[in-house]
Amino acid sequence: MTDVRTRHNLPGNPSASPYTDLFIYYLKGLAKTDGRDFGRAFIGAWLEDGFSFLFFSEPSLAAVERFISVQPCLEFIDKYQMAYSDWQGSILGPGRFGSFFITPPWSAASETLAIEKQPIILDPGVVFGSGSHPTTLSSLEALELAFQSDSFASTLDLGTGTGLLALAAARLGCPKTLAVDLNLLAVRTALNNIRLNRLEDRIMAIQGKAQDFVNVDAELIVANIHYDVMKELVAAEGFLSKKNFILSGLLRSQANTILAGLSDKPVRIIKKWEIEGIWYTFFGKIT
Image 1 (tube, rainbow, N blue to C red):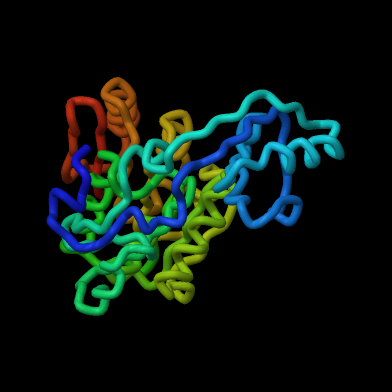
Image 2 (image 1 turned 30 degrees about the horizontal axis):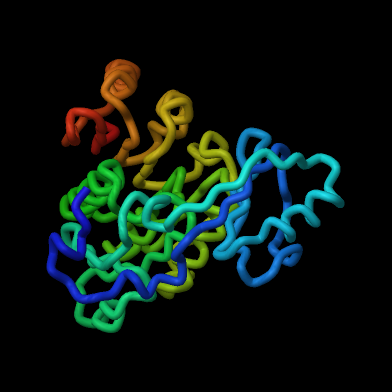
């Protein structure tokens, strides 16, 4: 995807990012740490399916080995080094996406946020969700469409990642959003972005399974999430208690299966996005 700085000719110097090279240590087992086991170079730990990825801003093998030596449940598998831009898939710079102006906090463009209509400061850290992925872009478009036609007193963002879609809902006027993610690092990243945007009074981010929160009272549900989880969400009784929905993160065959599952429910698809013939997003109304 084109670098948004070039595409929009916006100011800012993405080379000022605090993230340059990433040093990643891959472990078997769940490395539960609050970071105090390591030094200032520690960025965070991604725990999933019985494995851990520890992220650092500088080489930290010795610190990781000391950590493992007192954690018999952990086993070192491999280490990697890569540029931060390679990890995120692009160089992070400021850009306009519909009415949203999204910028990392280290960009000079963040100084101009006061004149922007829908400003969002976003530090994705090592969590995916910087705004460049097709499913994120289409979800932002769907959110704008939803708030153009209606107002929502509450939004439920399942699989929030960096918190970008929850932030967008708040900027569009939603006074109450619950942002949920199973991954603790994602929740911590989202919380940081909520604070950066001073939206603590509008957004709450918590760790948990999306399936456990689909029944929470909310007028709009947003789920840019894995297909296996999506299947359970649309089948849940609580899904039909919402006014509108945005479903994203689906490949073609998965999208067809989700549509088939919705065909016998009181729902109406208002708009469908098909991006690059691969990714699908749906905005719909529950009737």
